[in-house]
Length: 98
Image (cartoon, rainbow, N blue to C red; front, side, top):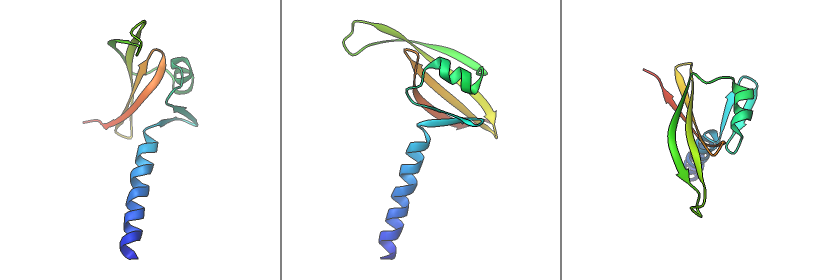
């Protein structure tokens, strides 16, 4: 039984870490994957950096959209990197600064 409990706790920890990358807390506000860039800007303020990464074609190859990365931080030594594709938040990554 003890082994099953440890396995369940390990799986719960992995699931909680995966969910944490889907949201970012900005003060008392939360931003989530799929949010518009204007919503993120309103909730989190101006980022310390904005990088245009290039352009990406849609699945049907009929349209292109801009890919941009915004940087927030450091906050408690952590930087947050938000990737936008076509004005929608697609990815949130965190990295400890040096």
